[in-house]
Length: 487
Ligand SMILES: [Zn+2]
Image 1 (spheres, protein in one colour):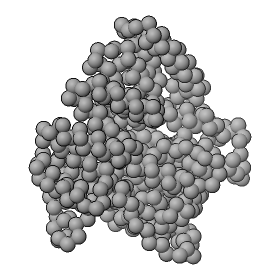
Image 2: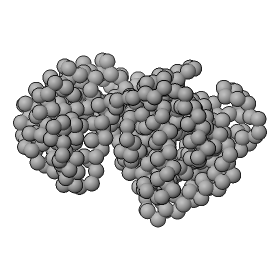
Image 3: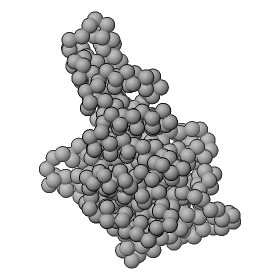
Image 4: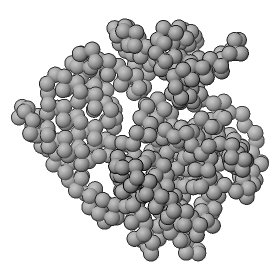
């Protein structure tokens, strides 16, 4: 059981739940028949709590930060009140992207790899943003169907919770959800098409305003539809199932972009290296090495930097550290340095048992790119590993002054506190990490351990105060979930 069940859930939440009566009031209507913002967030947080712990949730900071910045760039181009949307990547070869109630957008790695340029990817993400900005989920949840909605949400959560259980029970629940989704969708197909048109409209305008090519969105959807007819891509139907794609839809999009001047948009280097990273991580290490070698075969004059980087990554996976180092070297010496190259260089130095040099590379890279959390993690992990927890704690203190929402920093901090034998502080850090991962119950648990652990008076009373705060937050959350029948 995996995130595919979640996607099935999406069909229910986003597209399958409620019949909109004809002539439903327009957007922005705050009638009580709709799901409130707070209710939406409660459901979204509840689902994300499961998603973040799923093994298919991509935690890689370089990949995660890329999709977040792409999403933020599109979102910044939107009209109206600011909405925060959280973007994440799911390790899945199928071509899909989905919007969750409460403002979360997931993008499959298969989609990132299938797009031929960044505007195509931005088009699909922009379309998902459209579903959220138009409040499609909330609009579909009408009071008469509210009960049904919450019981479906509860079912989906039960499925997510059953992931660790026997595969048989997993299959049964997955099938149950799939059939419910199919039935619901059958009867709701018209509304769904209307929503698709709206999401396309919003997506295209975000693309245009954010400086991407709106035509690329049309091209991509055309290709997807064509490929689906001949069954060319595995997994294309996953997307098409949740986002019915018709020739009318494409014709609509074509009408909209027809009068726009053609625009040549270069892909960001981040887009290119994220794709290399995903490719280098797919298949066996030997296959990945062979893939990049083949891609570089005829390119003796200009070797695309992202392909060279991909080869170095693949070689590292194949434990050919020297070869990886030699492959990477010209990229670092060239006129276009990039933090991803420095991160890989530092990791290779660790692999080659040259930790002091690795620390130097990480430190220099952090001076240049202090915002790069991937490098900060690697640096801190290495300090802890080298049994220098005090240095790690000193750097963490500095970093946590400006970065407050980074769960992973708190996790590393917990390990460093453990290494110096400070158990109250260790469990407090773990609590802060869990809190930032949206898991209040686990945060409370850690604080309860912290309070019981041996510490000085100040530490203990501060942990107690934090425990009271977290308990209150947890109580509120549970009450809200109970009211929605999703606890
Ligand atoms: Zn859609």
